[in-house]
Length: 248
Image (cartoon, rainbow, N blue to C red):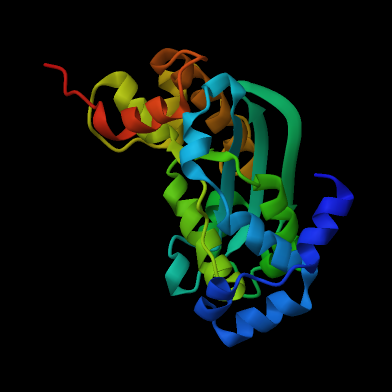
């Protein structure tokens, strides 16, 4: 975006209705921070209908993965690592984002046994609120892709909603649901099971970047089998929900 246009938008007040709907502490936070205000305006203006009508090969996808202190976003667990990969259509652009995050709470031994991240690894990392502007700037209005991606949504939304007054509006695709549509079966499959079926090799399992790379390759494989590049993203979204056929 042109710098002059961006600055002019940052100088504008929030629309009256949006101001009235926001809690006072969030209004004050946005008013005092032009960067956060622009982030709010951008994210709450995402036009999903327009995004999902675009052909797959003209669409921007962000493949997302997080590692956390545990499984329960709304019971005190927090993100400790995030990785995102940018795809244009079904091809990687080479852009990626990766960061450790200080959860401001201890990491349990049980969680460390899975992902290998310890308290000392994240001790000097910034907390999630400091990284939100660059995380959301990277995501922008892309279609989000991940394996069990609602897990990642929950952890991001539990910070976004009380801190900035919005939740992720982006369209999303779940590689497990796409796998079910492709295979014509019901079930619940872990990343390594889907990767094996799609001939994708996982490197550095249970690292955010390693799992994001695996999910990206799985997505590219499944999307190319379920849709043509000229078909709309909505076709894939519909298939992940509506076209699971149990084969005899």
